[in-house]
Image (spheres, rainbow, N blue to C red):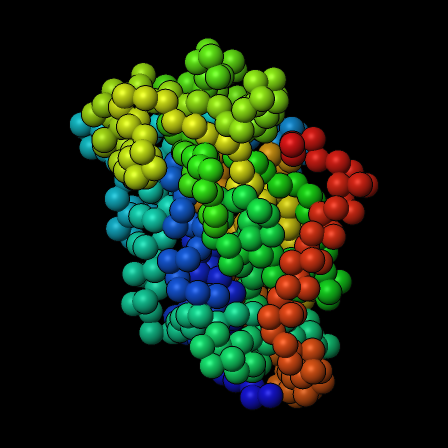
Length: 443
């Protein structure tokens, strides 16, 4: 097996977590980023709603309580406090990098509200905030001379040596070549697990490979059964592949949920698991595979300015959101569990970090508060990069070479079979965790 040396940091994933980690590494460190497909095939691109920003010191208590309440009190208070206190810093950095957020007439950042929030505190770009942030970060990363992006390259395993993680075994998707990439530090930013589920808003390629690999290597995993179901995705009888998300911001701006008799049946601004449970209950009572979402209470000009992509997609499916209700159904959306990491992204394996949706640092608890995901991913990936730089130590060359030399190449002879086994590992782990401690947020 060929081995590539010379990298200081290996980052698996090119969503906001992976890109922001690379951006905050010192220019003296050589980094390589891997992505299974192309950089735009990350769930970060799909985020519609926005990114949370503390609305002054007087908002801290409410923001903290909103996050804890949505997470059913299972959040790590220290992580929540850290995220909130750095929210203005993170959004200011994005603006400085070129991200374009909606503005008020006086030039200040406009903010909207979503379910579970007690006030407006979400910065946004139309209904495609994730795309705006991720594409901005990608442009800045592509300008860096010390960072290389390897598209259509799949991580098959991490390399474990006597000094901790020494890199990863990867596959070139085009040629099928399997080879080793050695690095002094490895950061897993490989996203969620939506590809494991039949219906999900995630890209199908996100199958929890990083989770499975860590399970195989004895790296601690927390709350793997804490899977969030989003209340509203567009229902279609011919649904295949990724479910189309109808942003929570739509309800934040006044859209309401209706039963088969077109009567309102719940408080749409409760946390997602509460709204999801209400929808499932109503579907069962009515004997229908969906409920209705009515956007007609939102001014037409607001829909055109704030939700153009949603209106366009609904039109493609034959629904005019300006004149009629649209059918919606819950689908798997977000992963609150993951690889155990601290407030600097450090896992239980030396030299191995995990950031973004693939990790569990306790911010989200048992249920993520809307629009905390982009903020959490950006902040803790930045802190991981800073931690790597602060305590940087070279991986002993002989130890690294020994670890690569000890790899069992037969394990990677059939990559497709290996990746399928990873999906099953994740499924089995979720099932077992659910047996031991059921996740009340799931339905």
